[in-house]
Image (cartoon, rainbow, N blue to C red; front, side, top):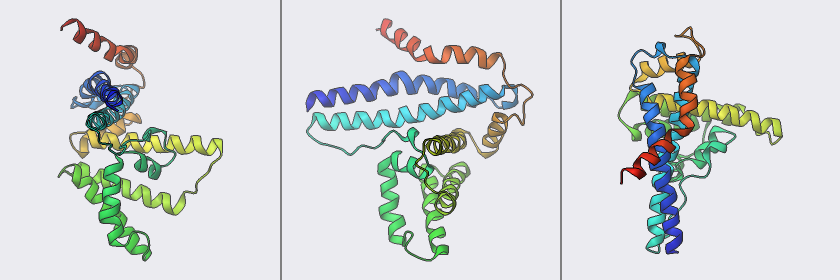
Length: 239
């Protein structure tokens, strides 16, 4: 049990120190620029993907460390992440991402309000309220409120219009659509404010820039896969 705990803690520490911190350094460079139109379309997309990976390795790394420490002392904590980026719907994504937070709002807010076992209007109200509170839980800012509200709208639309397709092509389409929604909303989550978020997303689709691919992307796409290796090596020889 102790060895498993040490191993799990080491996995979490590696996620945080080697992956999340270095991906976050690149994401900070891209999101830290006020005039986002100076970047090419692919460069801003690369920044969004970097943050998408950073926030996963950050949160799941901390969870792994907590689970590992618990096992060292004989406690068994529940898993908090279950491969969320393999989800084929946004609803499935939230069942796999930050599971403890999802269950808390489901069990202590959504179900006590009546859940889906009520009138359609009340169900819509319950869903939007839960996701409004989820956004507010992350911070008292309009960007977090918008982020949570947007997820509420998407989940309502999925429940109403999207039917599960278990075929191979259906799974691929569901995964692509889910990751597109997740990445775009991570941009909102990471941006300093809503205007910057909308400007960033616009640049990802070529609205604010005339450059689809530039030197910024060519350079970063080559060094990004090795960025964390360089940092890990530097940290090792500095000891």
